[in-house]
Length: 418
Image (tube, rainbow, N blue to C red; front, side, top):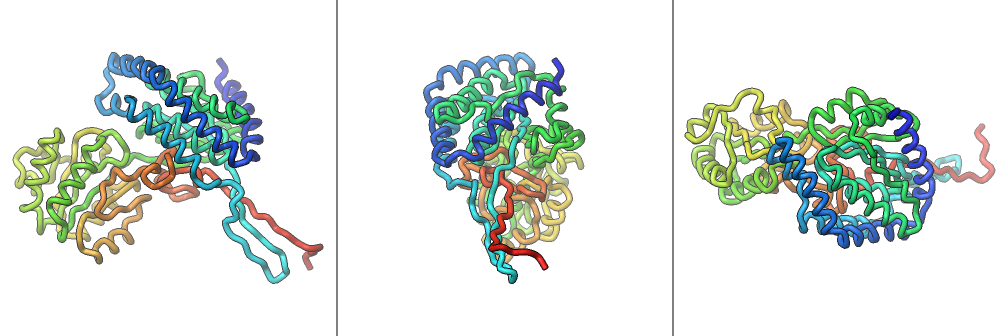
């Protein structure tokens, strides 16, 4: 197979389909999303069977428990995907919106209006739900999607991709607005990354090695999504019971997602009282702790953290713990080690909350909430393609509105420029 020719053919079909999709009525795109949601619900048994094949193959290859968790679907997760499509359908139309308008002294009326980006290539690993989330958001925003999932979720992604194409056909829209790359060969990824003029933007969703490859090789614009080295800072003024509850959720609800807290920072003033209680709750929940020397002195069942731990996204039931002198120390640590994803502060001190939210420049900053809320669905977006950690175009959860650009429309009345 000539992978460049193959991707070019997919991109041409996608571009043709996008021309129709991008000009379609919002009601047609809504109908496509709802039809896809119904198809996913109707195909639950077949989806679970396909997923079992992927899980079995992954287990045989020795994939980690965290990886298997990201791969696994059950009835609740399938229902959540379908519900997410309905939620996306219910959102306002992101296309053709007037973002701003004004009249200049010459009398020209100028407006800025939202438009689709075009053809979006999504490269992702393990998570089959990305097939649905990405395709759904692209349909909503009038973009064509070329989806390249990992080999680990090939069976599941294929049946989910068929459901999305079914929804488009049911609504009278071109099915090729959603296409799955039909090969797991890594050369196809390279062909997507260099498809200048054919694919308008690449969205990587996966581990550090995948994102690094995309950023190193891409000639097509990229929405950056680096790893989630997320911090929870428990500051003086926090309630111990509330802080422990939030931290348990932030770390252990699902350890394999990018919004899971990887480092706990704890004020020295409350460490002796707070840390033993927090540590016991985490250990009982199955979490291994790696701490700074001061933390290790307070909790005997904790191994010493290395410099590498502070810069590691575990995606597992492991938490690094550091005692900090004060907010200055905590903020300095976050600025040094954060990947720019999500940070949280837990305290009743309103002034500290304001300072933390102002000084921390990650894509998402939280106060008194679990970092696991870092999710487009939880933000009211229906779903997300990923959390963009860069600063250009999209930042934070990438939903339908973030998959649009804009154009300027200028209205004159016989105007000529002097």
